[in-house]
Image 1 (cartoon, rainbow, N blue to C red):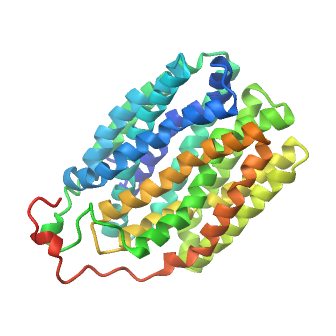
Image 2: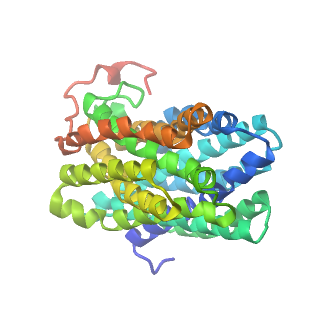
Image 3: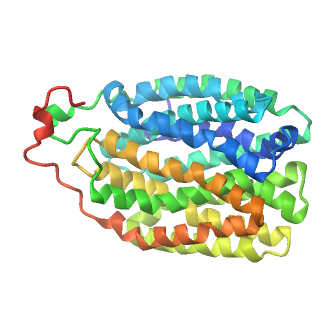
Length: 397
């Protein structure tokens, strides 16, 4: 691992993080069938993931700031490996909800550490790596999805398949993470004169957050409903049902690998507008696709469209100087993951009463809002206040 540059090590830990979770995604229809859940019942169980996120991220930002992103990655990987296979062991919807809640909690903490680490590496080296790092994350979740589909084809039970993938990736991830530079804890807001991590976010940060919300809501929909969509609409089963997400994740990875290069040449705002328009086009293709090949094209176009939004948003949020970067990225991650995780239940409820295509149509208005907010990525950094009354109040974190 010592032979790899800091940038390559960062990309490696991004790649390894979602592999085990990706192997869960093709098994969702199997779990749904095994527990006898309809779309609404599955949607309720899937709410466990956003609940875990809601409980974790408000505390994760200050915690990552105190222990540093490298330690957060090391601890987060262990907790994540223990929790990611729990949903597949669930024997009833309640246990499925709890398992997903624990998995979502560990995922959100680990991903916050990864994003803060990537931002610090980027600033220390002067080289853009955020989009490429997220490209490796997408490649990792695509790899996990393909592994999950392959193990499903071989007949391995979901719980043991996911546990196996987690057990194989954990030691490699810990070895890579231990070789990352330790940037240590961030100075407290009292020392820097910045606002507390618990203070309300600025309007600039809120604009960035709501820009990314519609994109990550689309990503969550593709993760949880692409296999169900292909099965219910075109009769795909087994490994074939998982191809939709594999195509989507592959195109996300492709877009992110070119994202840093394109950002240098087009700027963040124009790049975000082009990709936002493609995401809308891809959903429109899915709504009218008459067969599986055209549906896969739709997943591919959505993937390109969704590719660079979150990396662009992370860099924009971390560049705001009114609070620590970990606090701002935590708020962004909270809103982004909220979009990723509440989108699938909303689509499930619509699919239960209407149709899965109409459920996906719910993504169109939120993507339109994201497109309208792309200009927020071009703002100048918010300057920290010259005087911060909060810093003089005892007990404020």
